[in-house]
Length: 361
Image 1 (tube, helix red, strand yellow):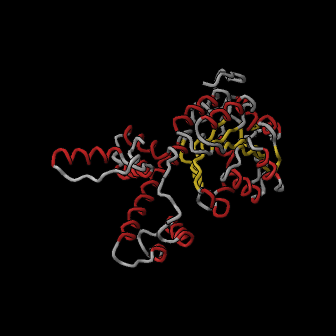
Image 2 (cartoon, helix red, strand yellow):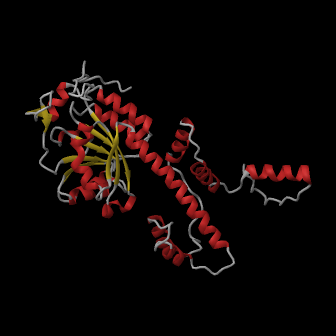
Image 3 (cartoon, helix red, strand yellow):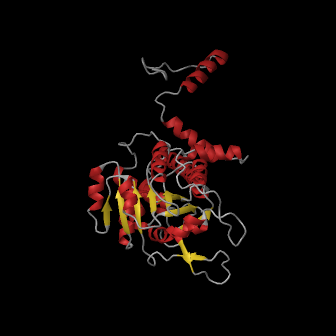
């Protein structure tokens, strides 16, 4: 639990629907103004934040954050930028419409109320520390967005802690990678509807047409993105196994052309195949310059754990995660155990290992 209790409300407003409002009255006053339409029992309506344009901040200017800033600028928004690397800040701030900040306090001070700060830093401790510091700087009615690959359990906790202080929170599952600048980012957004609406102009600019969806309450955005990435694991593994079979066959197949062929009328056509076609064009179909070592960033593991918790069988996603573990082994100790046992019970031949090549070496 974050320790700073500044501006913590004692009670919550009750909406016309009869449920607790996520922001207290003071916070809502910062983000709403009198003049309700007929039927709005609480007497508030949303402030229109300059039509479809807004001034927000982006914290974290890595390969996605920097490109997201550029796409927001192209959409006519104003953006304050901050990164721990001041050289990156200077580079991004060279763009028209961008304000450079040297600290998170400068970020917050540069923004009009209600402030919207988008955090795009690595999941885990960096996100936790950044949101904690921002929570001590913003005011009730402001909104913090986590666009990284955070665990949805963390997002639910953070959302509850921030709501208790009158601060809005949105977990925005963000997909698009290095291509997002040009083709847009798929955004899976979790949060209270009135909080999400404050940020919606930015969401609509970042996403392609039909590429943004408010999927549910806080936590739902990162949960949906987690499963999205779990599915990605399975898709990548299926393509990998299929093309390895093609590569090992007796036929002189041009895998670059096969990848292209399958994107024309085939039931397995996809953007991943387009990227594989591109990879073969760049690196050749033997991929000799690429080591078969595959990392995982956490979402696959969380998806498997969620499947276990929900009693959902997910063998493809699970095995695709385990295949990544296997890719990192120069020598499999488990396979050595099997070979030793087969030799013991059946006298089956074993292949001698090269000196120093054991799994524990």
